[in-house]
Length: 460
Ligand code: CAP
Ligand code: MG
Image 1 (cartoon, rainbow, N blue to C red):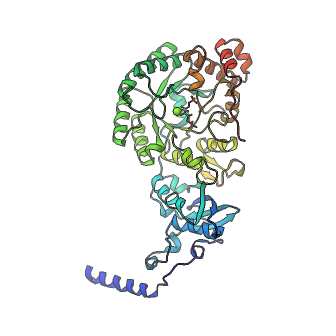
Image 2: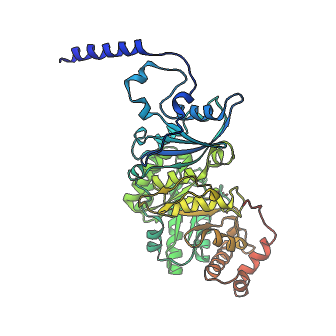
C-alpha cells in the first residue's frame, strides 16, 4: 500500500469510529471507578486524601482525580477509540473513608522522570472543581520504574568511608546571619565552627551570589577555611557550598568550578530549582565525585496543610529516586512543623532498602528501592544541645544534625558552640548523659544553661 492509500484507509476507520461514538458528559465513576481491579506489581499506586466538593460524592470525586491525572477529560471524546483506553486509564480500586487508592499503569510515565510523574499525578487535579481539597499522601513507585532512576551517587555508607567517621551522627551548622556577611567574615565563622568540632558547615538556602557575598569569593575564602580546619584538627571537614542559581547552566558552572578546586560538597535548593535541574546537578556531581546536600526550601507551601498538597514522604521518595545525597527532613523537636511518627516514616524511606506499609507512620504502601543508595536524613531548624538525646532517639547514628543558631548563639561564640554540640553528640552516641559530659566541658554546661528553657511544641 502506498502512503496515501494507507492514509485514506485510516481516515475511513476514523470516520466509522466517529459514527459509533456516544458523545456527551457522563459521571467519571462510570469509567474510572473500578473496585474489582487488582493492582499489578508494575502499577504506580497513589493514596489521595480527598475532600469532595459540595454536592459531589467521594466515588465521583476520586474518579475525577483518576481521570484528570491520567487519560480523561470532562466530556467523552471520539478519539478514545483509537487507543486502549481501558488499559491506559488510571483506576480507583479502593476507597477507605477519605482516602482513595488509584492505580496507574507504568506505561503512563517516561523512565527516570519525576517531572513527568508530577505533571500527571500532581498536575491539574489540585485545582479541580470536583474536589474542595486534595492531598497526595503516598505513592508506590513500581520497582521496574525505580530501576530506571539513578538514586544517590554517594549516600550514607560511602560518605562515612570518605570522611572516615563512623559511630555517631555527623554534625553541621548553617552560617548565621543567613544574609549580609562579607565572604571574608563568613569564612572566619566556617573556620571557627569546624575547628570547634562540627564536621561541616553550610550556606543558607537563600545564600546564592548576592552583591555582598559573591559565590566565587565565598568559595575561595570558604575552602581555605575548610583546609585550614582539616590541617589543624586532622579530621575530614567540609562546607556545603550552595550552587543554586538563576539558571541550571549557571548552577552547573559553579558546581564544576567548586569541584575542580577540591570541595567535598555542594548544596542545592532542589524544590525552588526544580526536579529537572536537580537531575542535571546530580549527574554532574556524580561524575565529579562531590556530595550533594539538598535543602527543601519551599516544601511547606505544599507539604504543611493536612488536607491539601503533597506529603513530605512523597517528596522524600522522589528525591531519593533523583539522587540527592542529603535531604532535610525536619527535627520533630525544633522550630519547624513535623510530627514524630511522620518524621520516622520519612527517615525510613530515605535509609532503608525496602519499607513496609505502616499506617502508624503514615506509610500507605510497601516500597522497594531496588538497591538505590540511602540518603542522609538531615535534622535542622531550631535545635540545640538539649535536643540531642531526643534527636538520637529519633534518628540514631545515620543522620546529619545541623545547628545554626544552636552554634553561633553560644555565649562564647561559634567555636564554643561547636564544641558543645560535638561533645554532647559523642556522649549521647556512646550511651552517656549530657550532665556527665557537661562536667568535663564548660562550653556544654554554658549551652545547657542558656537554652534550658527553650522548648518548641512537639506533635507525636
Ligand atoms: C536552620 C535553617 C534551615 C532550616 C530549614 C534555617 O537554622 O538554616 O534552613 O532548618 O528547615 O534557616 O532555619 P537554625 P528544614 O539551626 O538556626 O534554626 O530543615 O526543616 O527543611
Ligand atoms: Mg536555612
